[in-house]
Image (cartoon, rainbow, N blue to C red; front, side, top):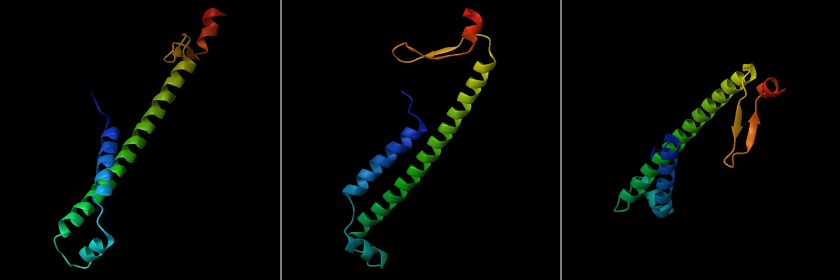
Length: 112
C-alpha cells in the first residue's frame, strides 16, 4: 500500500499532537524552564517543545504537499478539458455506480 506524502505528514501531525496533549507541562514547569530553572521536569518540557516544533513542521509540509497536489490536479483537469473540447471522439466519465457524469460534445457528431 502506497501512502501519499500528505497523508504521511498528517499522520505525524496527529501522532505528535496526541503526544503534546497527553504530556503538556504545567504552566509553572514551562515558566521555570524558560527562566533557566532546570530541574527534573526539564526533560519533559524540552520533549514537549521539540514535539511542538515537529508538529508545526509536519503541518506546514502537509499544507504545502496538499497545495502542490491541488495545483497538479487543476492542471491535469485543464489538459483533459482542452483535449475533450478539441476531440471529435466521444469521451465520457462515469461515477462508482457506472452512471455517466460527463459526456463530451463529440457524441453529437458521432450519433447526430
